[in-house]
Length: 102
Image (tube, rainbow, N blue to C red; front, side, top):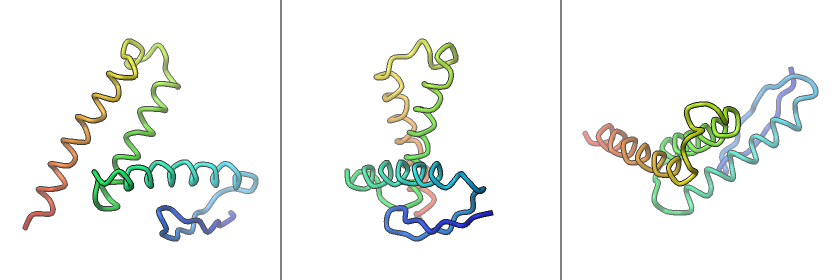
């Protein structure tokens, strides 16, 4: 097992991977960091937890649209997928807001 020290949104993380997977892991970290920083920079999403959830949803939707062109997303346009993601963002914001309120 190899350990890599990486930064995601300026925070250090030590990640483990198998020999030969370092490049792929670094690419994944760079991609995720880019997504999370872009979300943070919009100013619409506050808090690292929220940013991470929104980035994860975005990446998952991208993955599903590429992985399964005949799957459940095949009949949806990118605009429809984006609209559904934005609706999920609203729901998550409401849940996270309620969780933060004492």
